[in-house]
Structure formats: C-alpha cells, structure tokens
Length: 99
Image 1 (cartoon, helix red, strand yellow):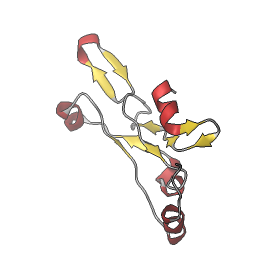
Image 2 (image 1 turned 60 degrees about the vertical axis):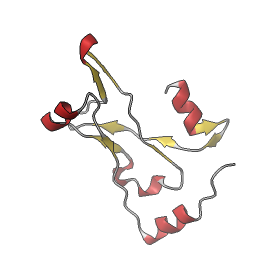
Image 3 (image 1 turned 90 degrees about the vertical axis):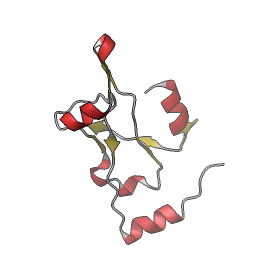
C-alpha cells in the first residue's frame, strides 16, 4: 500500500478506512492504462469506513471493463455495491467519526 493510502486509512493503530480489493472479470487489478508507455497501474481506489464495511456486498469492489469503458477514458471505473439491512443502518448512523 502506498504512503498516501496508508495516511488515508490509519493513524497509528486507529483504522479510519479500509482499502477494498477490486478486480475485473479476468482477475486483473489495473485501473489506468498509460498508452504512451504501454503501462498498466492501479491508481483508482475505494475506501470504506469501519461502520460502512458490513454493507459492502461480497466484501470487495469491482473494476468495470469492456470496449465502451476503454473508449471513454484511460481509467476504468471502480464500483462498489452497498446493501443495507436494518442492523447496518443503525451501525452507520451511530458511527462517531474520528476527531
């Protein structure tokens, strides 16, 4: 994990957010293609708070792929599906953000 992502996810032992695993239908992790250098990298991410984590369907994000996506941008979208039950709504609404 890069230093900026570590900074956004925790301070000391206190976790503020979790970086979600994300893959496309082929199991690839890249989200950005730099055509000039023919280089693939993961530069797009989704972070979730501890209170929101139980609502993340399947515990991970998904990278969208396909010809229309690649024609639109050099970045591929990273998406997450959230499913809220009455229990998780209570957890999210009662979360006290760190100060």
